[in-house]
Image (cartoon, rainbow, N blue to C red; front, side, top):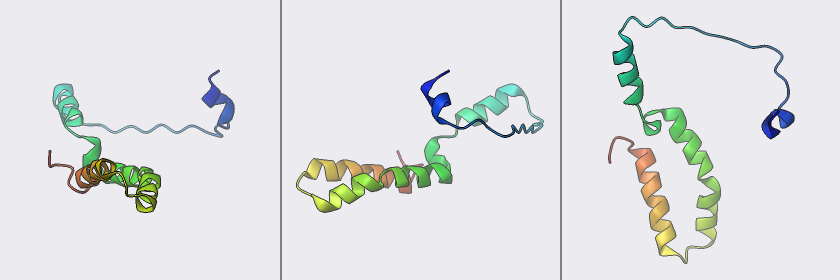
Length: 84
């Protein structure tokens, strides 16, 4: 038993879902591998929420210009995930 198992409650039920994809496995895996986390809107939202404490700290203390530039770069990547 892991520490995480000790903290999380036991599930009341389990659910399984299946989707039939009518394409060769090679094509499906290539499509899955071509998607990045930035391409998924939910990931962009979660990363934005994750950055809230740092953004609040930045607002309180803007003395370190390199920190501000780094966060600005991350924000820009979240807004425009396709831009590299």
